[in-house]
Image (cartoon, rainbow over all chains, first blue to last red; front, side, top):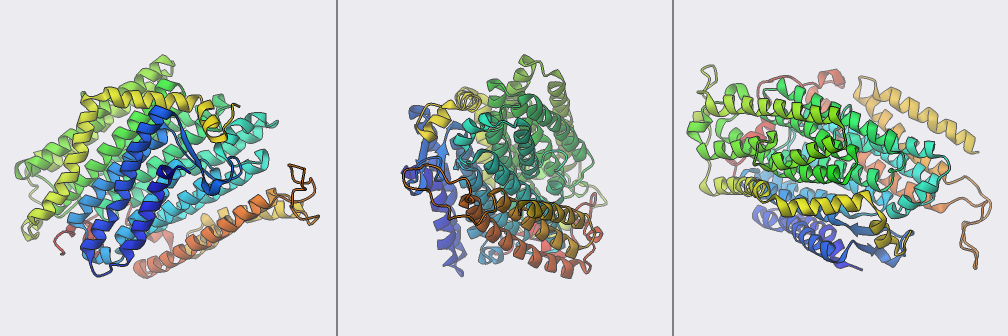
Length: 503
Length: 136
C-alpha cells in the first residue's frame, strides 16, 4: 500500500468531518479547511518527483490484486493535475477567507469544499472506471450544494439547470461503464487498455466511446453540451466560481484525455476526428458567446468554454507534442482563469456591481488590481512571454507538424477574439471614466478591512506570479508535460505498473 | 427474460428523454428519475439474467460457469442506486425551492440567469457574492 496515493483523498475527507464539529467558530473552520488543499499540493508535488524518478506508482486498495480490486494510479499527468488542483483550491480558499459571510461558513461551506476536493483527487488518481464514476458523483453532489448555498433566485435557477444536466451526464457515464464491462469483462483501466483491442466487434467499442464523449463532454462543457456552464457559473459566491472554473471542467477534460488515450485509442480516425470537430466548434462558439456579454463573470464563463476547445484540440491531434501542449494549456488555464475570476471578485467588491456597463475608472482608483488583471488577461489571450503564449505555441506547432491546418487556424483566430474580449473588459472597467448613468453605488459600499484586502489580494498575486514564472521559465514544466504526454500516447508503462506484467 | 428487460430499458430511456424535453419542473424530475433507473436496469441486464446456480467459482477453475449470472454489475448497480437516490432527493428539494422562489414550475420562467446584462439581482439575498466581506 502506497500511503502517498491515499493521502489527498483521506486528508480532505477528515478535514471536512473535523470542520463540522466547530459550528460556532468560523475561524477554526477556516484553518481546518486548509488541510485539504495543502495535502493535495504536497502529495501532488511528492508524487511528481517520485513518478519522475521511479516510474508510475500504483497501489491496490484493500490488497485485492490488480484487475479485480480497485487501484489508485499516479502517473506524471495525474500527479501534475493534482498539484495544480491543490494550488488553485488553496488560492480560492484563502480568497474566500476575506469575502465569505460567516453565515455561509456556518452552513458548512468549507466542509463541502473539502468533500469536493476528495472527489477531485479521487478522479485524478483512480485507475478504475466505476470508481471514477463514484468520485465524479461525490464531486458533483458537493458542487451542487456549493452552487445553491446561500439561496437567491439566480442561484437556485442556475442550480436547477446545472443539476439536471449533470444527472443526465451521469446516466450516460454509468450506461457506458456498464456496456464496457459487458463487452470486455473488466473495469480496470489498464486491463481495459489491453482487452479492448481483443474485442471482435470494434463497432460496439466505438459506440461505447460515444457514451463517454457525451458524458465527459457534458462535464467539461464542450460543444454542443456547454449551455449549462454560462447559465450557472456566475451565480454562486465568487470563490466558488473560481474554484469551479479551476477544477470541475478540468476534471472532465482529464477524464476525456485519460480514457481516449488509454482505452479508446484504436479507432482514432473516427473518435479523434469527432473530438477535433467538437474542439473547433467549442472554441468558436465559446468566444463568440463571450462577445455578446456585458457581465464580468458571464463573459469569462463563455471563455472557459472556448478554452476547453484548446485542450480538446491537443487531444484530437493525438501526437505527443499536441498532448504536451494540451497539458501545458490546462495548467496555464487553471492558473489564469482562476485569478481572473478572483480579480472579478475584488472589482465587484469595490464597485458594487458585476456589469461592465456600470463599472469604470478602476485604473485610477485601484492600479494594483488593474495591473493584476492586465497580466492575467494578456496571458489568457496568449501574448508573449506569458504562459498562455507558451502553451498556445506548443499546440499550434503540434497542429502544423501534424498538418491539421484548419483547427490550428481556428485556434489562432479565436485567440484574436479572446484578446478583443479582454480589451473590452479593460476599456470599460479600467480605462474609461465612470459612466454618468451609473447610480452612485460606490459611496454606499462599506470600506474593506485591511486584513480582508490582504487575504483577497495575496492569492491573486500568488496565481498571477506563478503563471508569469511559468511563462518565463517554461523549460521544466515543458519537460514534465512532454514526458507525461509520451506516457499517455504509449500506455504500456501504465499497464505494466498496474498489472505488473508486460502486455 | 433479457429481451423483456431490454425493451423495458429502451422504453424507460425514451420516456425519460421525452419528459426531460417538457417545460414543467415536475416532469423534469420524473424524467430524470426514469433515466437514472433505466441506466441501473441496463447495467443489471448486461450481467446476464439467470437463476441457475450461485455465482461461485469452482475450486480448481478460474472462471465463472457459463450459466450463472455475473455478480459484479449487480454490486455496481447497488452503488449506483444509492447514489442516484441521493442525488434525486437533493434535486427534488432544490426543485421545490425553485418553485417557491420563482412562483411557477414552468422552466421558461427560469431565465433570469440567461438575460443579457440583467440588472444586478433585485433579490438582494443573492447579492452576497458581491458584498461579502462587509458582513463580519
